Length: 546
Image (cartoon, rainbow, N blue to C red; front, side, top):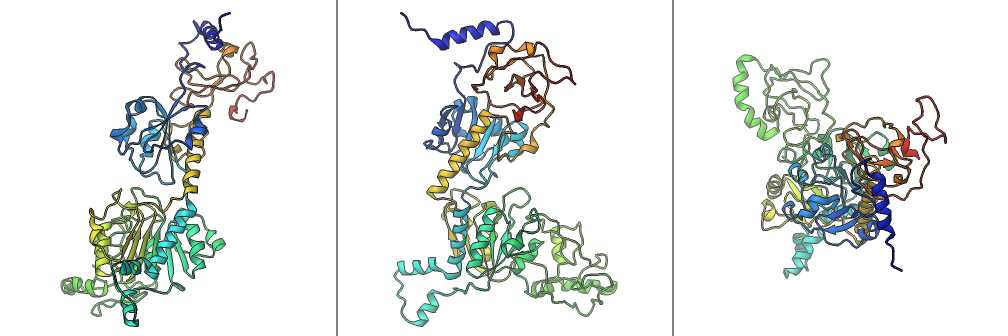
């Protein structure tokens, strides 16, 4: 007796049922499974067991978008990626079937999330990825800068013999005591909070600036919050960066923020006696210059000299001195906010001419640590500051250009610099957890709806506004078709449990097509009236709860 292919018989029966109702089934039981690709890696041993029953997993090992295989561009519905490549709008438009991208890590600045959302592609990250490892690496960098272990090791490797006290002073020059120093954290997410706990154990006074965080967490961790970036830079002996990179904070640490000015605190500056007493209603430490028009030319000619020596230049009587709150955002290059004594609406050059000596910038001899994103630091300005001694030392795990090489870029001649190749996040345990979480998020996308079913979608606001679920005549769906997701005629893109249309084409994004093993559900002979309850009491308005 010849063997009977049950799948083939079932497919023929389904084809007869579908004849005259809808087009050929494109994702039925015999259709190839969805393709999921690892774009910039080649090890899928962790992801495969999680996805093998739902999708075909492949890898590209691409070092640029030009190296992504054509089959992936045409067929992949899901993609996982590290930080090696960058996906712009033009790159995203090349993908014909892509519905979800999972960044294996917490940062997603290498993906145009707005363009992805507008194209119907969800972008997810792993926000809890490698928090402990990154915090440990950050504290190690801070301790290294204070205790200079790296430079002491290099001295011994170069054959330096340290015996006398004078030799110790010479080779360990720059080592400092940690207890009582102030560590400033820009951004106070999970990693920064872990750094704060560790730093307090070493005796640091910890302050942080994060305009997006609600009040109260500073009390629970015993740290101090400052409300302007300028205040943090001025008070910190060591600054550590823990914020995402975006268009607003690119080159957050630039020539302006690390420029050394007189560390005068609240010192009031008199310009040739032409500064009148403080008017009523002005801030305490803000003096309002009153320069007679006849002497304005002389005062203006002295401005460069005063600026170089006391960090203050006489201002025009047309620029009244006042206090304006600094915007609650991460200031970037050319957007330092408005400081005391500086009128709003002026460009950077004009504002620098009217700044007080109390205007906050990084204090002389501060340390800088960056384990967040390389674009936050202007490396040219940092190199110059290190050479001039305005920054005592810096430790960078991330760089503007990666993969990093000392032979290229402005940092090759910078002294007192520690660099690591973007490895602060790595440990065997962290890598395993991140890859498992990424594969699990892909699984949610395949089995659920996008972006509603995703746990860590970062671009939901760029998707088309979700509309109410539609109701159609249930007679249009044969009972034997219920339980699998098929390609439907224009108007529907998937079916939820119970045979209810899950999304309308162009209105609500649907899920990635995949086979579901759901029980057959009996349907009423006709759709119920709006106020009439269904036969089985099903709540058809909330299909996600079924």
